[in-house]
Image (tube, rainbow, N blue to C red; front, side):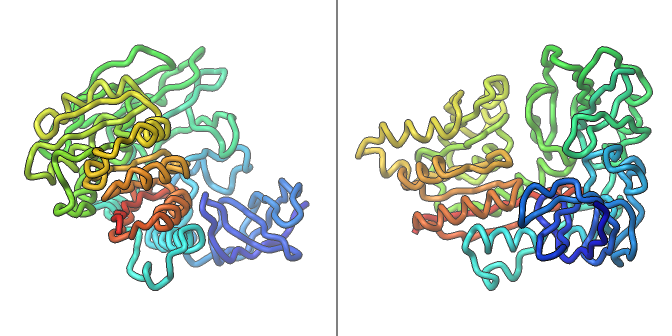
Length: 408
């Protein structure tokens, strides 16, 4: 069924919202202010349908030429490259939309008031506007089709879309020639642009290799398959944001401080740098390969206790084994929480509250998950005293947010 939709709002996840006969219709590739012809592709729910835009009837004033031709609406929707779902929106308005979505998520899911969030804004990373929001990705995952051509998947599919360029990729990746070779018989090619070890290709399940990443004057060792922030400015920017987020008067070097979902220790190093004394830090990470780098990366600032475990299970065990004499060590603790997109969830937030952790620095890549976890922590007697948001994923719907929760 082909319909005409007026798009009135943006949903978290990259889709615009229109209404048809009282139903909410989610449609990607559009902007508030657009009027589009769209095909209904999912009408299985009574109150909510999904559509794909086919053509523009009246464009939003914020619509621009897509930064990635292979993702443009001029192509059939099942042949549009995924990974740049805001690429048709001018950059300043992208951030307005993200700010609105962040505020709405914290109000609807977090129970915060509009007044508390009036000064919140998703900010650009330095230099991104000058580059048009391009050239920032230092990690790109591509997939090979049967002929060995590389490209991303189309949105919500496993259909490989061969592409001729990678406009969001760093210059080193974009000029590496990776798209010019054939990878017949390969499934995935991950291209990694490091600040200390050049460009690496990781093909399928090849053996991990050590690399170096530099953040300011600090070198971090990691694997070419370890998690690392994607935006080239993100490691330094988030480290600086964590330092701003921490109340240094509540950092006690000998407490049960923890870096949860620690990765290779980037944010744990930022926390340790705030302490006037050498920090005791439990680094909890389910990826044992990443955990192997943490002690060395933090050797200059912290005494690290590496723990290979799922964060929720580890926290549950800490609560189960909590002794009366340990309560002070937890109430004086600062914990960094950097969960995946799904958030920390109830088991982790309730455990942190049960332990009585004094200060939580939450680094979130999903505003709805942050809202849900914030509501839980506030319900347990925490106050959100700090909030910053950064557009570390230009031309996509993603953002990064840093919040501080203090036990009152």
